[in-house]
Image 1 (cartoon, rainbow, N blue to C red):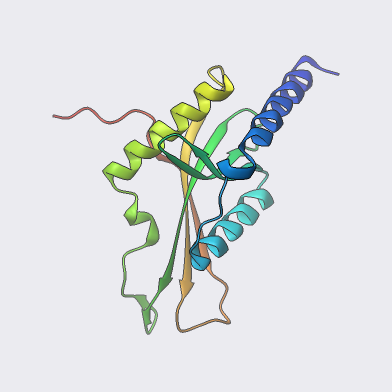
Image 2: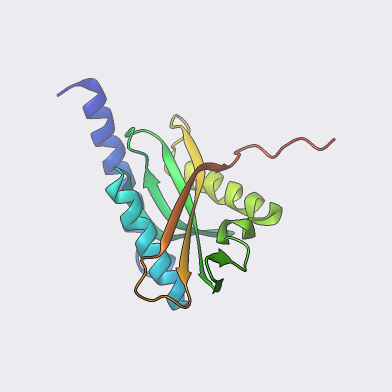
Length: 164
């Protein structure tokens, strides 16, 4: 077994131990059926692209990660914020802002803190990490049309931009 494979194996064991600790009262499903469906679609979308989903609705002090995953590179920890919205349409033009537009400055700060706590709790300081956003749009007037899924990699910078 190569050193990289051995390192990834021990990393995955550490992740699994962490996740066992999250189960029970530390994880909770969202009460919003649209959110549940959006998170399931986002997890499937990412899995199809080589991401390994470590947890859903992983709670830490101060918040919750909708999805926690490992990038296809096998190293990068990815906190995924999922935004789902039922979109009204008028012809072919959407009449509402896209779901990802609701990841505002306060939410970005909260996501950074959640990721920092997950990194500290799991001693992932030597791992690259990032925050992605997956937007899922359900068209209100077209149940037969597949939802639209958009994945924005590195959507939230890990450092807050300096104020001018």
